[in-house]
Amino acid sequence: MAASHGPFDSILRQHQRKWLRRLIRAVLLVSVIFISFLVVELLDVERMAEGVPAVISLVQEMFPPDFSRFPQWIEPIIDTLAMSVAGTAIAIGISLPLSFLGASNTTPHPVLFYSARMVLNVTRAIPELILGMILVAAVGFGKLPGALALGIHSIGMLGKFFAEAIELSDQAPVEAARSVGATEPQVIVHSILPQVLPQMADVTFYRWEYNFRASMVLGAVGAGGIGLEIISALRILKYQQVSALLIMVLVMVTIVDSLSSYLRKGFVQ
Amino acid sequence: MDKSAIVCLEKVGVTYQHRLFALKSISLQLNRGEFAVVLGASGAGKSTLLRTINHLTPPTQGRIIVDGLGELSNSHRLRSHRKQTGMIFQQHQLIERCSALDNVMMGRLAYHSFWRSLLPLPQSDQKIALQCLDRVNLIDKALTPVKKLSGGQKQRVGIARALAQHPQLMLADEPIASLDPASSHQILSLLRTICKTDGISTLLSLHQVEFAREYSDRIIGLARGRIVFDGPSSKLERHHLEEIYPVEEIYPGRSLQAVI
Image: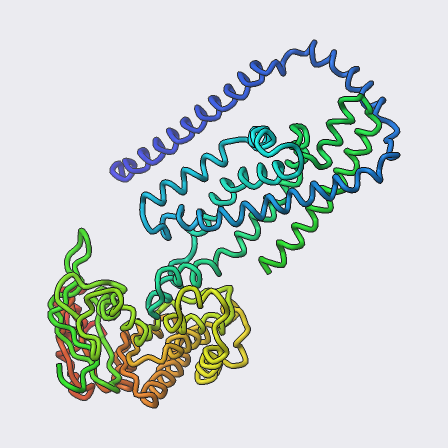
């Protein structure tokens, strides 16, 4: 009997050690969060309390929303929509080939693999706001730098997700395509692409939603659209117009989100 | 290489990395219009043998000579060989979310250039694919996504895809391993009828000796990567089977009879 207790004890000891390790990890995580709160002065109760009346008076100044300039906002709204669609399309065109180069199972050469991954990382690392400022300086104010900034920044995220979908695709149809005598490019287009198309569409529509929201922030650096209207209204302290614009934005974001999820369903079936 | 041969294997061996050999010095000739079955225990090298013939697993020793093409020495010859060699897989290897027709169309890829294949393939190819689906009695499921089909139906799509290549040689790697006995009979008799009608040489691997006896013209027995029997099914005796399925490895000192 004593012999059979040996393994039991060792299993229980391992079990205990596992719990201890988990506890240590949890304590570490909580301390990191606490330190972050300290650093951003979230725990400064006095300062937080002082801010509350200011927020209340700002909100009061926003009411009632002023829609008198509504006819002049229709064009910027369309501009913003066009910027988000064009930017997303630019990103698809560039990230699709890059993703096949940057997926370990379809890349023709390791050098191309690392170069593609590098391009994806760089475009993802530069925030679109910074890209927008650089492009406004390069091609002037307006919608063009906005669309380009959204497009370039989206390449990194779309390409990375596309490449991951390609790497996770089922190898069985690939083998079947090889066995019928298809060339390597044919194998990729006819056995991998049909498998990953729904995921690609899914990610792309998410990105379009995101680009629509991001294009408003880009207005702040002079990239046109409804964002520019919000920033201008804020600058001249027309808070009632700001609230009207924010309501419009909320409505548009809701429309874009539901349209995108409807289109996504069509792709996934 | 004599006239009736379609593919010749000369001392073909396959050694996987960090592992012992999977095939050792296999010399084999596949003839025109022949329906041959490979028998062997799991791990005997059946799949490797089939996959070596179209270089899905390239041989590490020896050479493979194809009638009309010669040795498979460059990628162009290999593609021509694969184009005329259909392959049927145990797990179908279909794209589940695509329709049966889309999957069968894959069999026509080698007939077109990459750029041409980016557009929908010509009507004539689509007709070929539909004819092949018709021959496996699945014409009414042509536009159904493969994921909605049963195991036996999926395997028939796999056969149609291989037929769409208009092959001279058909390789089938345990095509009935995931099917029930009724579907197994259906698949094997369908395969045999089609291959005999079209004069397609066929090499398929099976686990069931009874199926092999019933459907094949020729049986090739594999054990530990070597051929231990090669001849008509009528010549297959009990002592051959004991060599193909070495029972001693699992039950030392007992004969096959005692175990069964």
